[in-house]
Length: 113
Image (tube, rainbow, N blue to C red):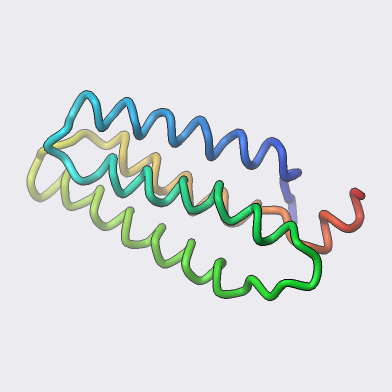
């Protein structure tokens, strides 16, 4: 399976956080950009604890995937049910789940040095 290196993975989360922040400024009434910001913020932050050797961080994976599913549902509801936002936030939250799929593992980090 393809895995990204830590640096580009973090950079992609940072770009997505910037897009979510721009969405918050543009559509302050909507919850969808906040959900995307939380998802990508957690994805970026959790690289820190995962980089510490010997630390059990399996719960962070569960938390990221759970938040990703919730963010997708919130964004879909805001787009299709309420009509408050466009589909871009649904794509942004789905991209967060996709980043989880290619997230570097501890074994990948050990191999790369």
